[in-house]
Image 1 (cartoon, rainbow, N blue to C red):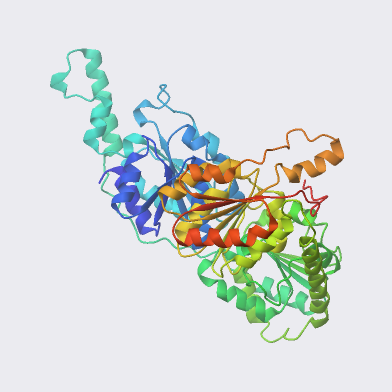
Image 2: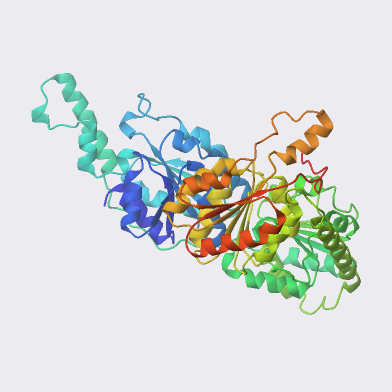
Length: 578
């Protein structure tokens, strides 16, 4: 096998079924090797979207996603997506091409110091220099990506390690000694022979191992008992659970059962949205800040005290704060907790439930009643606002219309500012692992990559991208990818002709809308140009039927984009984040 085939063999043994890429001469043997082994190769139009797609498959399956990109600009184009994965704790492997080892630092095409550039944004960055090291290094990459706090790993693969030795010998211009006529040429050929021996020597010494499985750090029983004692004394407890509670994708039912056993009011964020289903009695989605201000016990499961919780100031100073996080830094960020447990949040919830069997049954009924009445009041207010008349389409009405047509197995990809944030108040994920957003980095442009990964991982599910008209511009070219690879996603664009989330505060504070004005572009026609279907909606009365039509188009196997012309809205006025 050549190096590309060896890499593909490792990927297959590690459970990777799709490789995301944008082709390049430096990585061709990897793509061909993967294709030969039945690994689906999905090529995108921008390298960052290959990484976003790999990120999405990792989140939905628990198997590290894999992307392969060519050297130089191919690698540099992935930096935003790699940083997003790092901050979202997504396990993935980025395979980066590189110039031949013999040409390093000699002015070769696309030869830059890639490790220096990418090392700060990954758990481990390594350059392989011998064929014999390909298998063990790649296996270590999978282990590193999964263990402890999950995250991305970068493996640099020089092109001469990927082809067979005879081809590389020709690339080098290596000759037999009898064909060399001068002493300088003889020295050069001697050097090349020694280099080839180093690169290919012992290349059959490492055989791929079986699937690498890593158990996350378990909780300390003393921490569990201390948390149980604190919870026992609470009258207004609140759990806030984030993406780390979904990392154990095959055991989510156990996590849900533990939450139900404990009976504590729960707020969900990130990938944990949908963990409890659409209308679970323990799940609350509105007025979280008010609930935290009144709480006397707060457990943060995989959620740091960052800007989303106002750096810890959102939580009652007198509350007993328990943080459970795979990162010790995040467990103690910005506020000293009563208890910081550095372990897997799901395992902690299981252990806490086991330690308190039946102890909290029927507790906190009055607390639940207060939170539920507050949630219901907020829902009624949103319903009233959604009915307000509009010249074009009320954004809240648009979100209500989407909410009403979603299938039970829908996967929602959130990519935008104001429209997407509005949707988060209204559109409810139907179940676990059904909501994909960028996470703490707040990255625009995740939409198409996430959707491609989600549709590959869950081909029978409806996959929706909720776009703002600003964010759709980042990845609309990937409709070409959707069409070529038969990924029938549904995209809805909230088109209000502006970067509204920015403009709303900029105009008020600085009295200038510079840089925030867009056109009501015909995004539906752009999608049609790539071979997808497009639908334009300019009247509220037409929207429900248009969304049903989009669902039918997707069921028939064609991706579709619905361009919804929105009115401006003050629904989220004053929501600027710092």
